[in-house]
Amino acid sequence: MKKVIVALSGGVDSAYTAYTLRQQGYEVRGLCLELFEGSTAAADALLVGEKLGIQVDIVKSHELFQQQVVDYFCGTYGKGQTPNPCVACNPGVKFAALMKAAAEQGADKVATGHYVRCLYDEASAQYQLWRAKDPKKDQSYFLYRLNQAILSKAIFPLGEYTKDEVRALAAQAGIPVAQKRDSQEICFIPDGDYQSFLRRQAEQTSQAGPAGQAGLPNCRQLSEAGLTPGDFVDQAGKVLGRHQGLACYTIGQRKNLGIALGRPVFVLELDPVKNQVVLGAEEDLYAQEVFTADNTFIDGGLPAEPLEVKVKLRSGALLAPAVYYPAAHGRARLVFSEAQRAVTPGQSAVYYAGDQVLGGGVILSGKQE
Image 1 (cartoon, rainbow, N blue to C red):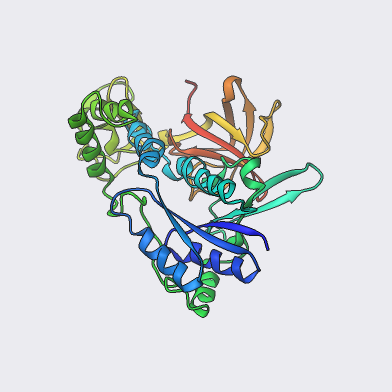
Image 2 (image 1 turned 60 degrees about the vertical axis):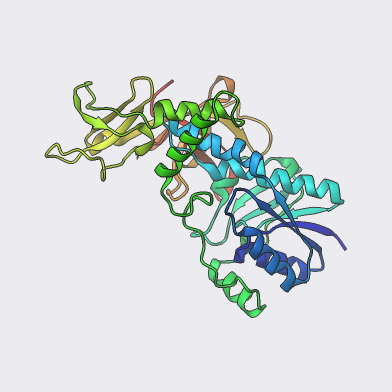
């Protein structure tokens, strides 16, 4: 009997993952990460463990989550970019904890309730990450940073199911969270009011002073830039009005700008150097070239030659054909067949070949930096 450590979040997906692996004959042990104060994950995870008859370990990871995810989240907004916390959390927090637990407990595998598939390719002797059967729930975009060491141990039982199928099967199995609603917001900001969250983080950091919590420079940067009012300007630099802080806006935004110019205007750029929000017409939102940094590929290498790929520029975007042109220091230039709307620095560009995830990188901008 092989042993598997299953990440239990308290939701139906992770609960059914544990259930189906137990049905397949695995020795299942649950691991629930308590990531922040006020999290209810542990209570639901223990309820699931009791129902399934498996042990559930609760691990408090507040400090690591603060450093790896919350400080990154705040600091990215402070740089005039839009963060992607799930991309940061999965390899640096969740899978790191799973792999650590597996090593300590002698487990053969780790598993999560992500909708994604992991396949082994004998020709290349490589593990591959593939999109899920259910395109509406596919979460491969958020997992492109997983490496061969993790994928060699990972099981994703839900990759072949739709969400409706999982809910129905969980209900049949009597799993108590079968009908629990999916979280629609960032897990550590359940009310969705991220601007208030950012202000609280900045205030707490300010009160802590120079000897405050780990990651202080990111939060200090936020308080100095992300929430500092500045000018709305047009593309020629003409001042149009005042903004509330770069963290209050994102590329492509039209509503809730708090400015009336007698014509529709959109956020084209966030300039942290000048603390300016650049506004313009919708046609100016499109870019045919996108530059990325921190590129990583699942096979462990980086392309040395141009590569034809399909690219997702945000989690809900359609795949768009492009050519990946490698550059120095893990950077790349993407040239798209058709111009892309509202390219957002800080988000991830994820590269696919068909349904296979090749890798991804962090979007810099629609221009060279």
